Image (tube, rainbow, N blue to C red):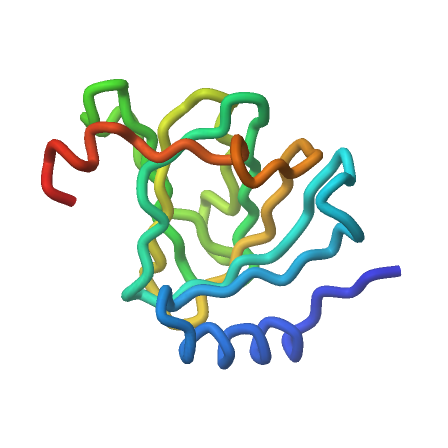
Length: 138
């Protein structure tokens, strides 16, 4: 059995504060070749996961601590939907379908989401960043 307890979230949170990107993941899957990828991502408010999409996989987010804003964009970069998820709020999670541009932004210190997506993980094709990021100077 794998447990996701406060101690793990605290430890990864502390480590994430020292990271340049101000976020850190902790994998529960054993290999990048696993057909289901499962991990937590602990993010700080200075961290924004830039708009990107996954061509072949949905991505599901369940909030375990703090608050995280997840935005979905159209192909031109306009926001289509936003949701704030948190373990104590009305929205505790979201699932983003494959091929949907989306981003994450922590709203509180040590915000933590549990993420599930299809594998296997291939670094060269796992994530495609939005082409309009360059044109908007982001």
